[in-house]
Image (cartoon, rainbow, N blue to C red; front, top):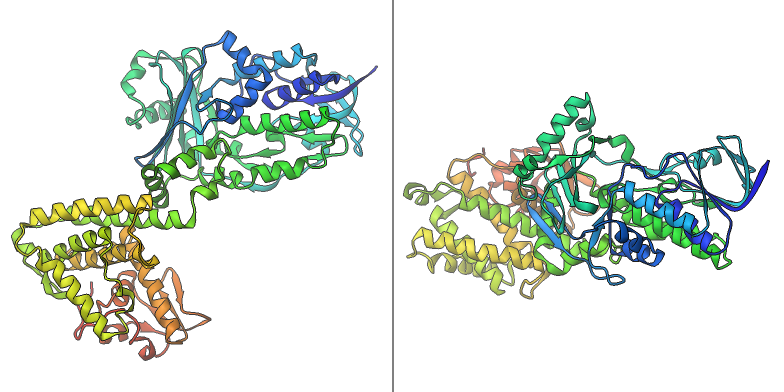
Length: 625
């Protein structure tokens, strides 16, 4: 016997049940099918943001959940390498917080709502589709033949409907993370969803409904491998690694009420699929799966159901559904996989900036509700400021950590032979003060080509030293710390004094060069990989690029034996090969012409020696390390 419906919705969780409710309320005859019975759980990140809460409120689902359960509305905190971006959201529909509901609770409530609206629910799977152009129905695994105007695949990332349609996955992505999660009872009530990200691990701690807590730990793919006992040991050990957001002693008084849910990295690979065709459409993870680290899955599923349900209820078609879906997902797909990479240096730069800039920090939170696109948060200008600030802060901390007794303070700095170590630190304090006050030497970028300007620059820097000559070193270091810290904050917030664009990088590049000078004077090994050195080397490469172009020289390739940089326009005619430290010291005027000639050159170095550094080269080589 063949039954006839207006729509068959395959998959009865948040996407499918929401769609079934909307279609049934519009007077359509709807069959909702799922292999699972309800209530039942499924892998999920659980968190729902204000945009989704508005939809659930309009649907009536939020009232139904509140009638049966205690929900906690939570603020959102994302902590990366110690930098917190935390707070509420710009309100949507009166909601400025998120909530977290287990799927065993949420999906059951949505199925109940669908059946109350008149949709018919059956526990069954789909073995075949009827027709293909258009699709005209399904054959259930019970053998029942169901004809329908529409077949909707809301059956998850390994969708049976998509497989039966032969719709391939495209634009596939993967991250670095795997998850272990479990539910707990007995932890103190909380008004926060906390995410704490370390270099190779992360924790999400968030209250769910009815006093239950979700604790999810993230690690490299190995975290989910091995025996159940090994995974449990890793999970419990990981919970003790995040004291900033979870007091592990509280676990002693709490009870884990679920097995550990294992989510390997292979379950988290993203894709797009064609969204719709004659008689069919895919929604939720069936049509587009993004990394769950940004917790967009539930919201996207419900929003897609809303688009399809309201469009068909109004007598429209789905010709524009794919464009709408893809435009809405643009940037957020890439963003989810960008955040699914473990935190490294650039992440520290970005999140230290977000944590210090209230406007940018709020915009970051609002990306989770799709009120702000990620590109609006991480603009080129902001990233440049945040990277400069992070690098300067790294250099400042290195200077303050130096072991400086009177003998070391009195040492001559070989790269700056007129200065002692004490004098050079006084200069750094002066640079920080002048940068903060807008008194940085305005012609600094042009001094390399004009001897008179170079002399004025030397007078400026000498004044920074002379005004501090009688101060105790402790006072000078405190001044450097204070002004340097304020400069970092101003960079992060975009509150630097007005000036030329290069003013942002000038004090950072200066600190990079002089920190290398200090290390050389104190007999310390160079630090090629630190953020300040990386920034300084890049800044001075850019400056050399400009000088080569201005003089009309052929491009020059710099190579440290592992990585190459081409400076100047066009194809490089000559290559200079040396260690990275030596390259940095050469292009900052710390090596003599003879020393630079002695490096490995593929051609004649002579045309480049007049522009290789923005300062006069020393007459004799500074001892190379």
